[in-house]
Length: 170
Image (cartoon, rainbow, N blue to C red; front, side, top):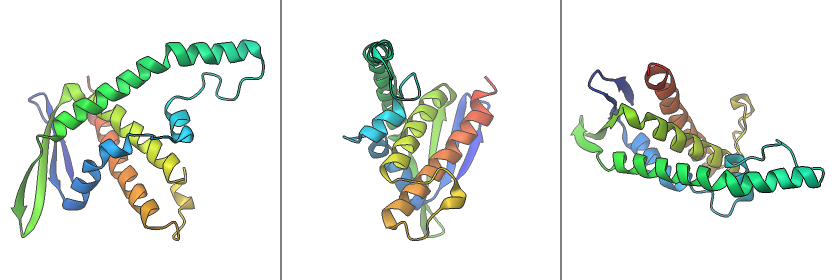
């Protein structure tokens, strides 16, 4: 995959290979924490960074959950919807006997893409118990874990591009 910042107010993913396209097509599912309490806690951590130890802290956490969580959930959902709308514009063609895809995205959607990709990565890491340090990868982690690692790495590469080439240059 090739990521390009363009002068016309867009950024582009070119030469998206079939495996990369497959990982991108799984973004919506990756953003869904399902019933995983651990995934929800990674997305919506406590403002304390630890369990509450007294009634005052319990109240603070309860206020945080009732006042902040709904807005965060709404923002996450809106970002995912923007990304899914952008992804419906992917075009494909055969090149050298293989499918290759292309996607042009407005630069103003970069924040939404970062939000959705980050949400997906957090959930993938929790759902598949991926190591935080790539030096700790277990070669016997299983097929699903390796696909999750690949998916997370692709999402991370796109995020890095967006942060360094699009968002920092606003």
